[in-house]
Image (cartoon, rainbow, N blue to C red; front, side, top):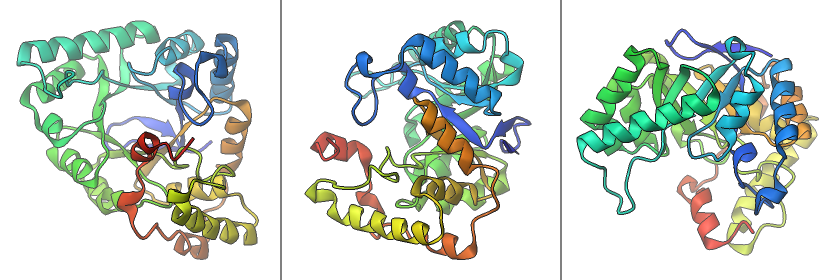
Length: 316
């Protein structure tokens, strides 16, 4: 397992980051309830197997059900061997408003305290805002509290999970947020616009949605009619990789890691075979120029919107 520096944070992370949402709560295709998920013993075994294989970077969140608890239990005696990244609770209330300053600080601090307790640690390697829009990224109280938590030793680095390139750019330019977790994949490469800026500013980049909720795997077939153009585009990738003797998921992962600005690729893992497949993709020679050139994004990247597709029922 190769490692990379996480921007200028001084933290070294594995190229593969273990995404913890799937082990903590029902999430993803075909997972409708806890009965479809790994049981605790299986999840703990999977986490420890990943660490033994060299995966040291683990991503979780206060909102991910039992994920933090499971990671804390799995790594109870190996805290020094892992880098733990967790995300604060959502900060907006049910109406979409941010609370007043005192309540906002209390919410952030209580969320971090709960995360530390569940993880069985006294510090986080990375503390992220969850679903950070530009108002949240610029909010004076939020910025101050996160910086205070870092000064108090509760987080080695602070950052934000963003969605749009504009949000990512704001976070990178702010001089406050040291790590940005953002969506990036073959179909939607809009965030590519901020990669150079992140490198210039020393901001660590962690990319998620690399497999686009499994569509950039064998599951990207027989999609519903509204996604016919997406399926056709994915078929083009599949033809390319078949001619080069690699799988589509491997191509998607290695395409993201071909960018030197990327510190780690985040994959949700809830099956031993998924871990094995991911590990087999790593440690190989860089992609050829022809494969990199073949990673042509979908012509209408704004259409690549998994939450919207979910709401429309197109992924069922």
